Image 1 (cartoon, rainbow, N blue to C red):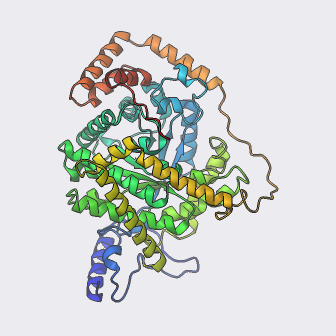
Image 2: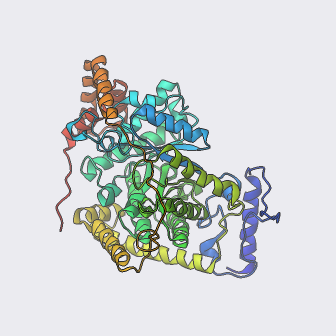
Image 3: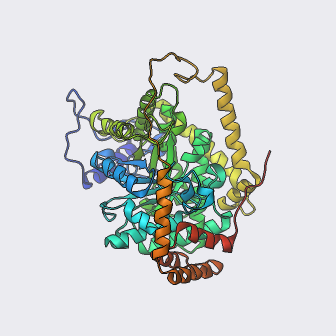
Length: 555
């Protein structure tokens, strides 16, 4: 790009910048030097076609012309433990301490679509997240928290749609118009088969549910994002940065193809897709990954899937610092790791962020550790001045080379996935890759390679295989009492006894009738939830229609 074209791009950026609301703050260094909102080349730079300007295609430098001068990222801490009342107290603490949104962690029975009193739930209720059995639990979870004003993310995939229905009903009971709701639902079932292994049905019925949800939200809740496509769990399973990026975006392309197959307008449903990435410990690689992600997504949405609007080309993403990088040895080192990873996410332009607590490798976060994790973001936001300049590392020879390299690796993986399919679509390739175990094998090989380097000492982790002497003392960790499970089951039994059984049965029967046919499942599922059908009852009714899925044994 020559100097004249660069100046034209700078002028376009300036026009957008000055037309956009900005925070009423002075933007200076600690020593008082005024800084520009963005920096770019003064002369010819052939890289500018790929780098661009903030708020301009291909969005390598961010979605908004103002960067964080317009709005900082949302502090969205992931939390959930015990029962709904206990988690509600933690949410109120997070919001009072400066959290900007909520992110719900569910326990294992809920993630698997089981009620707390299911024999398979024994010993797991409330231990890795909050237990949710029916809409009344959702009422308690958000008691005193106005759902029309607070954005809420829910990390759940298999039973995501019935949990979403409970969230909608909780909002109705608060008197909030459904159309005002804003937040995200993970719903990403592809990554379950690829990495996390929490599914209910075979892929096709899950895609049916996701398609129904996309249609419903496009028509009824335009601001809500029904699909948060998750790379976090792929990276935590052991993938490389390039694999995380490529597998995640490929899944996203599959959901775009699902929406198009439903006859939906990509410029309408495209903005409802969001992403969830891992911020690992390799500082510059992570920044490059985030920048490459925006660029790839924008190009594919425009050139492959026909998206015409900026919003449909935007890759919005939430980031969580890497749980897999935390160590049980010398756990206070985890505060440093988390801060480095959070800063990488911010310099990569994340839209929202969760910072892990120092004790999460041992248990659910204590209140003290959760506060330190929250304050880590606030120190970055309020003290470091990294919010002053959009994409401050843009133009760095190293960062730009890494961005290009990761993009090229991702594109090569996309081609492999498409080649696996029968019709050239990303969806067909993903389904074949799941069936053949290709994704799992690729991740396993990457994880094995990392572990081998760790054991040989080629990769060093402080407190684990180097600098192991310490004066640390045992941590006080959060323990969830078994009384939580007993009380949850008692309350659940009382709810079942108090409801109108005929209304519940009729609602479940209508839902299964639609499931066996071709209608949209969201309205009858909402009716079942309003009647206080439990999560297990809803999921079991669907299992009766669609069966269950077991992964083939592989060696």
